[in-house]
Amino acid sequence: MKAGNKITTSTTSQFHSNRSLRKQRRSSRVAISKRGMELSKKVNASEHEDGVDKISSLPDPVLQLILSGLPTTEEVFRTSILSTRWKNKFKKFVDGVLAKGSLDLESVRLCCSDHYSMQIVQKWIHAVVKRNIKQLHLLFCCGHWLKSIHLPDCLMTCGSLEVFRLYLYKRRLNFFKLTGFSGLRVLELNNFVLAYDSVYVYDFLKGLPLLEELSLIDCMMKKLMFLCISCPNLKNLRLDNRNISELYNIESICGCIEIVCPKLVFFEFGAFKAYKYIFKSLVSLKKAVIHPEDFPYEYMERKFRGNGLLESLSTSIDIFCFSLYPSVVPNLKTLELTTGIHDIPIISKLIRFLTRLPQLESLNLIIEEKCFSLGRLEVG
Image (cartoon, rainbow, N blue to C red; front, side):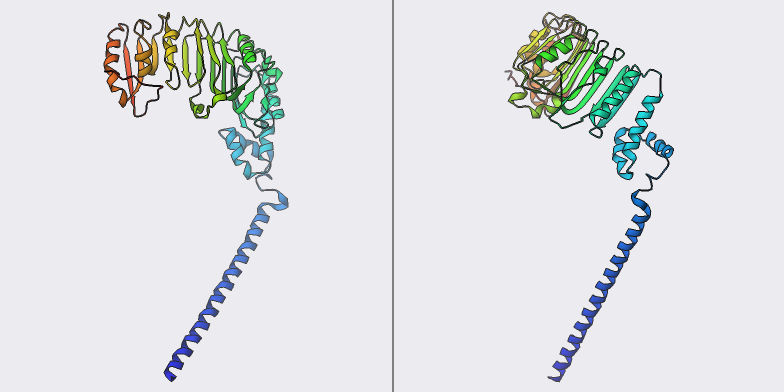
């Protein structure tokens, strides 16, 4: 019993000793934590004395020098967390640059996403228009995503503007009363919504007498009855919706897409869905890139028939072998075909076609593991 009592007493005293040691460690950690918080407060107080961070307290010329050294406007907005004056200082910097100069501007690229209001963006547009801008590239999405974007009148009446590229971050571009752009030669519209405006779009494009190049990229169509592109002097046309093809639904399919461009030389088409396609007067076409996604085979033969000038074609092997005939493209010089491993059986048909294309100089066969196509015919 005594031995047992001794052992019990020894164990109990050791237990109490460990408890007191743990308490001391906890109290020391709390003390360290409190000292750390106090030190942090002192550091913050020194960095943000009177509620102003140290960068914001720098002289204006120094801030402007830093801002001018950033590669893009996106970098300005990403680093705006460093200074409370950063964003406003950049606005004043842009205002100053546009207001000081008197010489004509050749090219301006403004990427501001939704960082500034439409009022500020319009002010900048007005400033570059006053300096006879020739090339303007805008990326912005001011306002709520359901609101339409109205381009300022000064831009539409700018006689010096020749190249206009617009990226709207899935905003709707309002074509109502969209007129002007009398000197425009190149127009590129990216990532915008086209809804209900069939007649206005037709009138707008028809009112661009000098337009030579048109690109509609990632154009989200909603309840659009028809899209008619009738431009007498258009030479290059690109319609490419492949990046947003997975977003299509029944409302996103256009009723009819009609293209009437007698001087068209280059045509690229990808995933612009419609119930009906009409191609007229493509008698000058020399190069075509037809991406196979959702393009109906039956329109290919009609599209190129009567065109003896086509020299370059890029498409899928399915479309070429089952929708075209050598007699339709007799002067073809360059041919690029995309195929998959499953299309090997139709290679024999392709070879027969190639022997009937005497002008062919180059054949590029791209074999992909996954080849997108509407369908495939089995060749026995």
